[in-house]
Length: 300
Image (spheres, rainbow, N blue to C red):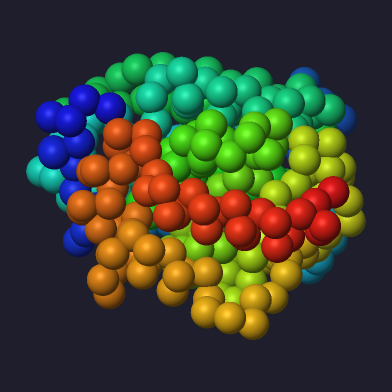
């Protein structure tokens, strides 16, 4: 990233902003084209995906039953202008490079290949800022995955997840053992050193989460689960972990990166000096290696 752009980025005091839409069709031969529209949502400047969650839960009458939809179309409009953070104070900025966005979304296609998932990226203007429409379509898919896919998009836009995801690209180069793992798996592995936040409240704490290989992660997508689960619960159930008896990973990472009382992905010096420049402090790389060695026997 250009250092001048990095200097325009803010990581604190940001407002949660989600601009998205959902169209979901359930198979029903009584209707034209064999389907009934069961969810139609347009949200502008929402704090989260509450409307989408509500619709998913209502489809099953708030039970754990899974509902298969004929098709879905999801749109997330995200900002690619750093002024979205520093001027508008929006916590919805894509910190990835364009080619990284494509790779990240290509991996989503691979994970949901059985559902004919596809996506489009369309540059646009939103709130007078440079933005990107991320449009995802899929067929014969459980309604639950409306929540899952919206969260997947969110991880590349909402701080501190977005910065952890950018670090995942860098860590993959620095730690050869991770080069063949999906980016989502590397993100969850890194998240062991972060802790609970708005977009990803996965209980890291004293646990190190092992990354899952592509085949295993894809297999987990089609394993039994409950409609009422949050996405964090899904990760907790399927990503193996190991408890650490020494200092918690987040505590160690903050000390190593000298991020004081703040998590490093919300700390200006770390984000601007390292994450934006695609670098990781040598001592942090060593700690990541130690973490990997701790959970490598759990990797599937």
